[in-house]
Length: 270
Ligand SMILES: NC(=O)c1ccc[n+]([C@@H]2O[C@H](COP(=O)([O-])OP(=O)(O)OC[C@H]3O[C@@H](n4cnc5c(N)ncnc54)[C@H](O)[C@@H]3O)[C@@H](O)[C@H]2O)c1
Image 1 (cartoon, protein in one colour):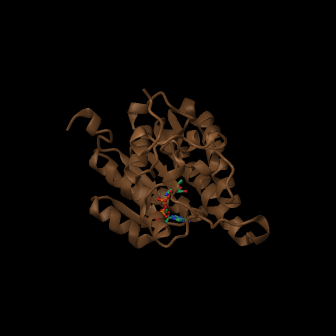
Image 2 (spheres, rainbow, N blue to C red):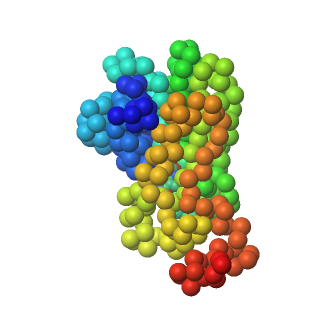
Image 3 (cartoon, protein in one colour):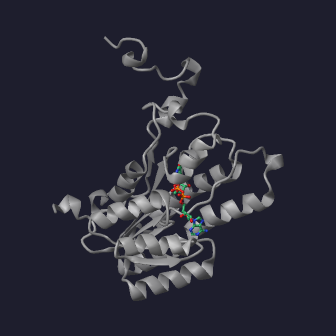
């Protein structure tokens, strides 16, 4: 194992929302790179299953409930070790809806889990890291934080997560704690695969990216692992976009969209 393969060096990373999708993939990647992995998820059975397969620590926790997050912080640090890396990947999603159809209960719960939950997790674990003088946090926002979309609660919660990341990076920088965020584009996790199969997307999300394809979970996990690790030791307060060029391609719409490659019938570049 080279130093680049062993970014964890036996340190503890906690993945909140690591029971499935991007969080699970990140846990597996970081476990393979020498991190001791703790998984917390509202789905406690999934957290325990993923953690057990990595020889790690799993527990059920609702990130939106202050007492549960505080209890989890005390328990994990007592029973498994001081948390050096934190990834907050827990989130809930909403269907596309105009404001008059969006129930306030959906608005409230989305903000409570995605924004308040991210804040509670950062507060509990970041404060402990700051007291010890070392740590690295990665929050997960979304491309929905970067542009206009008809997911009013979800997009707003994610834009706030990106902003919260800036504030906390300033708050804890001198205490040796870095705080960054990753904004994935549409990523082919099992939940998204299921939505694609059941025709719940208006179109294949990959057609709207510069690269012409959807993002793979391990591509997001690589970005998260990089930011948590010491390889990103001078990076704090950034929002690293992993979107296969969704953001880039969007502004080409008024020019007919990004051009297909010559092999796909597009214009020759010669
Ligand atoms: N997959 C995508 O296309 C995509 C795109 C942009 C951003 N993201 C973001 O990436 C992150 C991971 O998403 P994913 O696609 O892997 O989703 P996912 O549904 O596969 O995983 C989310 C996990 O969070 C857990 N969770 C939900 N509510 C929770 C709560 N209150 N407390 C604790 N755990 C809770 C779920 O049980 C689940 O295991 C999310 O922040 C999501 O907003 C995903």
